[in-house]
Image (cartoon, rainbow, N blue to C red):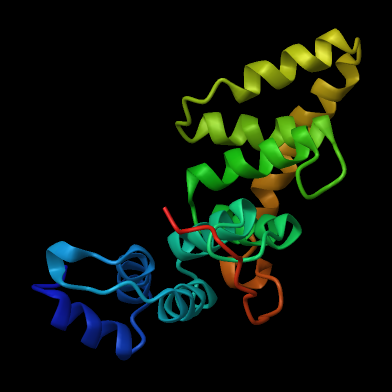
Length: 186
C-alpha cells in the first residue's frame, strides 16, 4: 500500500488508521530490514490511535499485549474489551480469544456458555482451533447440556450485537498504559 517507510510514516502522521497500525507493529519490535528502531511508546500510541479509529487489527494487538503482559502491565479485563472491539472489526482471532477467556476464567468469571458461543463464532469464521470441541467436551463431562443450548442461542445474539456495534464503541475508556518490567515484546 505504501512504497516505503517514509510514505507509511507520512500516512500514519496524517491519521490513516491502517498506516498507524502497520507502523505501530514495526515500531513495537523494531524492524532492521526497514531501519525502523524499536520505540514501544510511539508504537502503543499509534496502535491505540488506530484502534480508536476502528482498525480491528490494532485493537487486537493492544488486546494481546494487555492479555500477555508483554511490554505492558497485564490487564486481562481490559484486554477482553479490546478483543471485543477487534471482533466487531472482523478479526477472527479475537472471537477465539474471547471464547477462551470465558471458558478458562481468564480475566472474567468462567462462563462456559458464553465461551462456547464465541468459540462457535470463531470456528464459523474459519478458525481451526480445537477449542470449541474441547469446551463442548468439558460441558458434556459436567453433564450440563443446557449450556450448549444456551451457547447456540447466545452465538446468534452476539452476531446481532456485533452487526449493530462499531469497534470503537466497544473499547474501554482511554487510559495510559503501564509498562511491564523485564518482558519484551514478541
